[in-house]
Amino acid sequence: MARKNKSLQSAEPNAPIDHQKILGLAVNTLGRNIVWSLSKRTARHGVLPGVYPIIAWLMQLPESTQAELSRLIGIEQPTMAITLRRMERDRLIQRKPDPDHGRRSHVTLSAKGRKLSQIMRTAAYEVEKLATDGLTAAEVDQFFRLAGIMIQNLNIDRYGRK
Image (cartoon, rainbow, N blue to C red):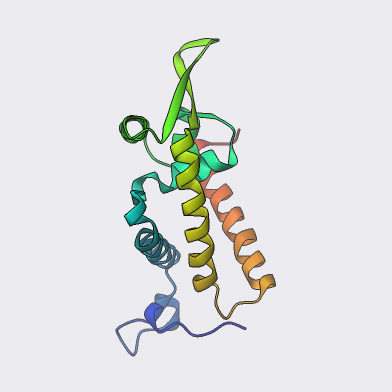
């Protein structure tokens, strides 16, 4: 059962309901609130918001490349290069040269990165539980299904069909 969310209601009391539903604003606000809640739980362990998506993807992939991580996360390669350098400096990741491609390396979580990924996993579970309070399992599944479709549609617009 869906609940009315006052934080998404317009500050203008007479605004038509259609003007209250702005997908980008809702998703951005949701994302920022999730990051804030995660940060509150992980900051004392040295896990900062900029590394969340990289650690999350490397938890799911045995290894990746800088280019693949850039595409998956949706940030530009130079920004990814800087973030990966910091993560390597902080010993959160390891890079191994690709034997088939001289300029490419494979990125994996280090032992320290894997330890922090467990802290992140616990924090993410707590935040997801908070965010989905009052929703049924079917509604949460539907959210992920719809978000997946939207992400795919926008990735096609951004990167073209592959």
